[in-house]
Every structure is written in structure tokens, then in C-alpha cells.
Length: 498
Image (cartoon, rainbow, N blue to C red):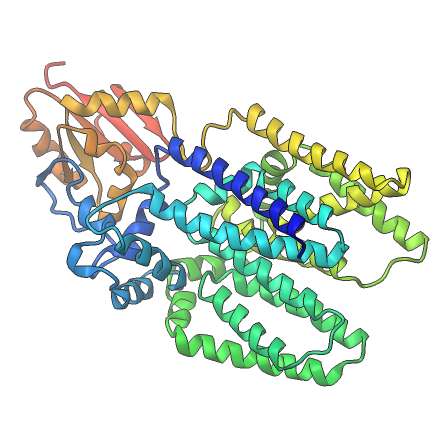
């Protein structure tokens, strides 16, 4: 890589890092899973907060021990391993995350999670740049694709979402890069070793990596078959099987998560349930269209199909690496839309870079066929940047995956002189109220059957917090005094006098 390439790539990394930090400073709220993320990495002995029903709390209360690393429990990887065994995800990300949190014991900050995401973003940027340059032999195109992808609102959703998905993004890009390096190259011992490392890294990050790796590996197998490289194919199959055995030996909780864990049961149920696939697929692709392609995804699909047709007519069409990637991304999306528990951008993280890269390369090829001037590619870069800026503007992009609103900020401020009763049945439901409750004068967790007696003790009134699941159990008079609702959070004001 030349000095100018390094300079351009570092400049992009600095730009994306600066934008990530900008959005990070504005992040004021958390998805329930983000709060849980801290607990899974740091809480000792359990995946849920330790809550005593009927006991008043102030400030961080039971959240403190849940989200923070205590001074005496720093770098406690055995606990991380055990917590993930109780949960439904593999442990590798939580090991990295717990390490960062352990550097700052007895504290909580959104920046611990964002810092881990920035680290993986930097690695992903280098990997994606090398991948695209390997495909196109063009440093300009490589920078263009990186800019086009890493300035989308969905990319910043990944950066702001404090979960394992930035790490998963790196795992999928580096795996795709490995296959590209050996697409037309004899497989040596180094390939099999790197393949094993990449598969184990990805699988220990997220189970959905298995689906992605399966389709990419199958696409590579087709290439080996077409080239009649049967000995190498046999070795690849043996390596993949050995990797599967190694993974299950390392992470023996996999079988339990798949067959007994609630996410595994959901995936199996969805796989054999018919009727909602089209709805989930439509919603998923609508989200990608809105947040990644400025509402123009159908245009890019047409451009990709046109270029495939042109290649076919000109007899330039062949089973190439980029065609394989597109097919694998489509198959992955179909499977995920079928088995995912709900519609959410996070599940498409493994293939988002493929969608953006394919759109960029197809448009570039079309433009060059029409104008045959390499300088017009700068127009393609400008177009994608303009699309991404327009998406941020048109969606009033405050901060990704934050669920923030001025209304909620004002509501949280209003709790300072109020007592709260929080109606839940299991400890994890308290994570819904992580942002609001520390602002209250006091808050007490109760079960639905404790509500009537608890209200008798609130002579001066109180705020009742609950989730939509339990709101129907509240008295109609209380429900009429709704103060605030955001997602699953509901808050009502109870006035005993009226």
C-alpha cells in the first residue's frame, strides 16, 4: 500500500471516528439490550439485576452493581463465561467488553461500549479497503466503497449500538477477504489455519455468523468444483467439519442455547412457521432502503441486474467473486428474515457491506461504460455521500439507535421530586427504566399484586412505571393520567385525592 493510500485511508478513519464521537456525545438513551450488555459482561453470578421487591432505591440503586465492574472483580473472565452460558450468545465479545470496563472499575459510561465499536470499525475499514482493492485493483474505488458504506445511517446505528455487532461486522468482512485472497490461488496450509481462526472468531462472536459462513463457503466450494480442484475441496470440507467440532468443544453451551435457549427455540419455531415471512422481508428491506440507500434501493437493484445482463450479452459473464457475494447476501437475508425473532437492522450486519459495495461497483461500471472516463468515479463517490447526508437530514437523524426525544428528557427531569412505583414480575424488566429511574426522588419495584397496598402508602401521590404488558392491569383512573410512553415504557401519575 502506497503512502498516499495510507493517508487517504487514515483520513477516512479519522472522519468516521469523529462522526462516531459526535453521535456518541448526543447518545442519551439505551436499548434494553444495551443495558443488559453491561450486566452480562460485568454482573457477578447472574444475568439479571439483584432487586428486592418493596425496597425503596435512590440513584443508580440496583443498577450500579449490574452495569459496573466492582474493584474486586476486575478481569473476571470466568464470570463472563458463566454468564454467557446462562444467556443465549457466545462469549468472545463480552470478554473484550469486560476487559475495557475492568480498566475503569466502579464506573459506568457509554464510551466503554462505543470505544470497543470504534476499535472494530478501524479494523473493518482496513479489511474492507483491502477487499475492494483486491476485487477492483483500484485504490480510488476502494476508498469510495469505504466512504459510501461508513457514512450510512445504518453504519452509525452499528457504531452506537452497544452490542457485539461491530465485532460481527469485522468478522464477516475479514472472512470475505480471506476467501477473495484464495479465490484463484492454490490453497496452502496458511489458508486452512486462517479459515479456522476466522470461523472460530466469527462463531464465538455471534451464532448468525454460521449462516453467513455457510453460504460464503458454499459459494467458494462451487468455485473449486468448477475449477476441478477436488482435493482442495475435500480438505476444505474436512477443515470446516473439524472447525465445527472445535467450536462445540470450546463453547459447549452451543447445543443448550440452540435446543433449550429461548432464542434457539424461537429460531427453530420461525423456521417451520409459514405466513409472516413476506411481511418480515418487506419490513427489513424497507429499513435498508430508508437508512442505507436514501429510498433508491430499487434503482440500484435495477442497475445491478442491468450490468449482469450486459455482461451476459457481451459474453463477459462468469462465476466471479462479486457475483458469489451478491448471491450469498441474498440467501443470508432470506434465511434471517425467516428465523430472526423480530425485524431489526442488527441481523443484517453481516451483509450490509455487500449490498453497498455491490451497488457502488454496479453504478461505477455502468458510468464507465457510458462515459469511459475514470474521473467520473469521483461523481459516484459524491453521489453516495450526498445520498447519505440526505438520509440523515430527511430522517431528522439525532443519534442512531437511541430512542431519544426531547419529551423524554423533560420527563426524566420532572421525576426529581417524585416517588415511583415500578410494576414488574421478573428482574430483567427493570432494565426498561434504566435511564429514567435514577432521576427520581425514589423508586420501588413491586409485583402487580403488590400495587394496591403500595398505593395506600402514597398519600402525596406517585408515578407508576410499568411496561405495556402490565398496563391493562392498572385501574382505569390511573391509566387516564398518563405522563409518558416510549416503546415499552409507560408512566402514569397517581393522585390519591382525585
